[in-house]
Length: 436
Ligand code: HEC
Image (cartoon, rainbow, N blue to C red; front, side, top):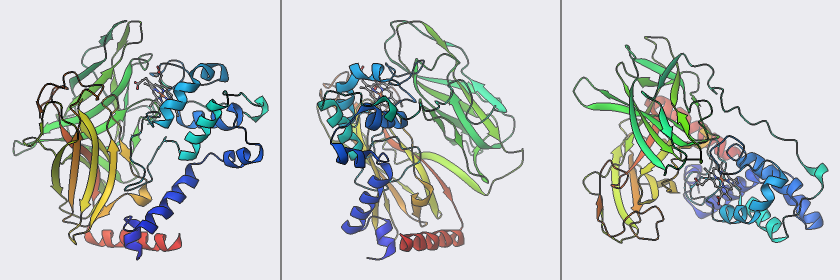
């Protein structure tokens, strides 16, 4: 098999090799060896490091998660729930299917099979604490109040504060704000942030832009996603995303009440390149694979498939994607149909309406695609009662903006490059492959 096939997971042997390499990267250092030596898994030595890496950014005081998981005392009552949620891969929220497509992502909190197994063995053994001296030092948790991108030079906030009451049901809101920008600019860094103290009720926020193009068409794109533990995009030097004068910003909010009234006025902050500056690489984020007219989800039906396509006009590197579906959304795959006829699965992911997750590919494996490649987005919806978010399985569902209508498309982020740069990058990848 040649390097090109292997990089694209073109053969089984390649797939297995990658899977092994990925597992080794994610395994907690030393844990496997420790278990082999004395057979017992303990909190301090084996479990705490996993929680530090994958859970505590959310599960700590003042954050959106329902309980803190910093100490043994806090974790112990939740041991069985932790075993179940991790075994089902519901926690941490990250729904990428691990055995297909690209396997390395930026800020991937997901657990390896070995980590999940270790948690299971620990709980089954009675969740022993172990030797306190084995515990790693507490990790430094990112401040909830500070901007990760530095103090922004431009801030757009919700037009009005939102009051989340003490017994409110979960709310999904789309709120628009004027950016007040009077010139086109390129974004260097962007971060979406709840008001100080409001992190507890802001489950997620996805911000996006809308503007009118000269030809009257709607333009815009995805901006940034806030979810605890993952906020703020700082683009690599020379890379930027266009924001046009007069842009309106959409805040797609998910609030969940915490039993006391909390007021939020979420903001999005920007660092911008100087006026007139155009970066070498312009990051594009756009809807890919909409199935506006074709979405047809019968009452009570599961695995209802819809397809959408987008042709890449130039050589492209895909930097990431975010599935967009509503309540009935279940699963999405994105594949690249190369002009050569090769079909490459980029990613498949489950979909859970409670979470809107952006999956950013690690740079060295981010899909590199020739001009003319067709991105193919396949969505599956579940309109049965087994879908716990489904308000009414007896209803037919089609395309629409309300949460109870549905959609299927991916926000895909990518940048184009000239043919020569593409060839260079491809050659670099091939050399990298043969060094493995
Ligand atoms: C991105 C933030 C985030 C991360 C990371 C995260 N959680 Fe959660 N977790 C939540 C939120 C929010 C909930 C509340 C339920 C929901 O909204 O899905 C939750 C719920 C849970 C529950 C169920 C609590 C209940 O009331 O039954 C368990 C157990 C849990 N998390 C364990 C974990 C573990 C273990 C990890 C790490 C391996 C983890 N979580 C990582 C945010 C997070």
